[in-house]
Amino acid sequence: MVTVRYFAGARAAAGTASEQVRADSLGELLTGLADRHGDGLGRVLGVASFLVDGVAAHDHQARLRVGCTVDVLPPFAGG
Image (cartoon, rainbow, N blue to C red):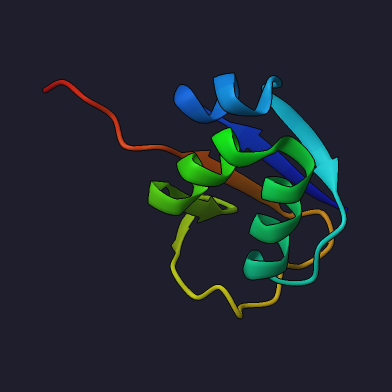
């Protein structure tokens, strides 16, 4: 299981602040989340940044270890 934490617009699109999900890779996780929560979250995921255990993750083929935390960070406005 992987813990997914949603922030700002991602939280609104998912309808929850966090959840536990089974996924072997970041790409598999993102596909599963979009399928589970619909097009609104799918659009957010398309422009979001991701942290895996606090480290920026860009490789969607990268394996996720059991028990890790993935933060979903949509673009933020402001300065």
